[in-house]
Image (cartoon, rainbow, N blue to C red; front, side):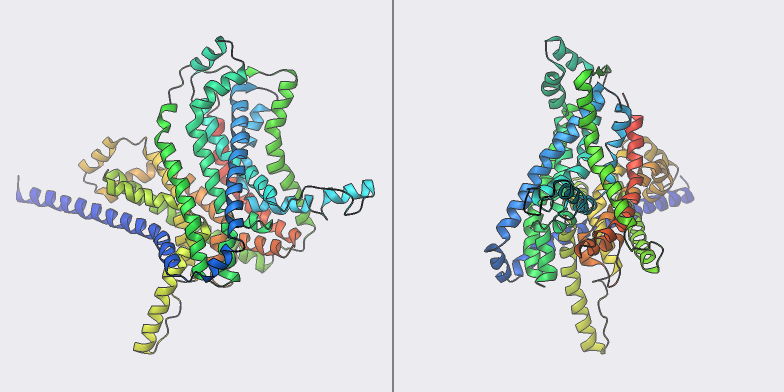
Length: 556
């Protein structure tokens, strides 16, 4: 081999080595940043004064625990029953409207629960349409009848169920579509009715997928702030916000965040454990299950059971919000609203780009080095989805505020120059919170796409002289463009809906559509809150349309 050839080979090896080192360093940096709020909350909780926490323990801490646990249980049960039942009916049965309903059942996912809360408060509260008509028809006074209170724990649970059941529905439907007809027909041949065969065969086989969906809804439930705040339900999420802003006690907020973080990480561990055991349920579907034609009352019952979630989670809220918006004084074209929309779109767009880029780096590092260290970095990056936005906000503000104050004090004493707050209250720290919160969704989309890319393609790229960065840029990214665009769109819409982190961390006078909706609803100006709420829902339809297209392409 000539000296020139040896030099080229040595240069190529050096380039590969440096590229691999750069990806590894960036991956570990991202994982460390994702771990920072968890460690920060732990340290701040241990060092903080416990006086406020002792006061809360004697007054509302028990309510926080009971209400949070009750919401998790109610939402878990509700989403399980609606999501699983609807998925089985549209997959295994044939009835009028089935083809339309199998798509429509996904659409409520586009709306955050607090938007439904605003709509149903306007409809069902004491001065709302329903009770006003009831009083007009009967002549009753306010104390002459009983009506369910929408502003309650039960009301909050229903709102969350109506927007979260699609998680269970999508996973359960995919599991039912993947099952072979053999076992189901064997149960039928042994005298089982369709319902008995479903309970004894189809449901157990789909259990891992259904459990993953239910655990996902539980994690979303403990992260919810807007719904429980509007309905006056005291949970850990509202307690963190009240401690931070109402009591101005960051130590108490950190201590409450630690309790919620522990619960969230427990759910994340359960989800990971369930995902690890889910392999047995995924067999190849060799025989297509013929749909069961429903007749008579069964046909109408299926239509009602599948249509009711769509009616309650989509049709009624959209109609109510549209009527409310018509009667409001909010002007979408005013400079103020243009600023809200611009701020929301800017945050969501930047967060989507940064989050997808981080997912590519972490995924490439895990593909490059299949070691425990790479797996640990990927796992740390995933757990942010299980952590509420308010906890992440507290966990980031505490260390960065301390750094800003320390740097400012040193610059003042040394150079008589004030640096102010470089990180705290900046748009970039808020983007970092979004990154931690939604990185798991982007990683999931990346892994789904990269799974079908053969490693032989990586080897061929190396033979042609590309290092790891070149392979990712010129080979992986073009092949994964559909998956990465889907991930970016999902993160974009999740950021549009995110409320607690935005409320706590947004720069001064940098309000978004979600913040504006929350502020107007907090002032009981529900007609005004309907305008930004409808905008959030309209933007949320984009990823749901993509999901619907995927559902449509996987019909039996």
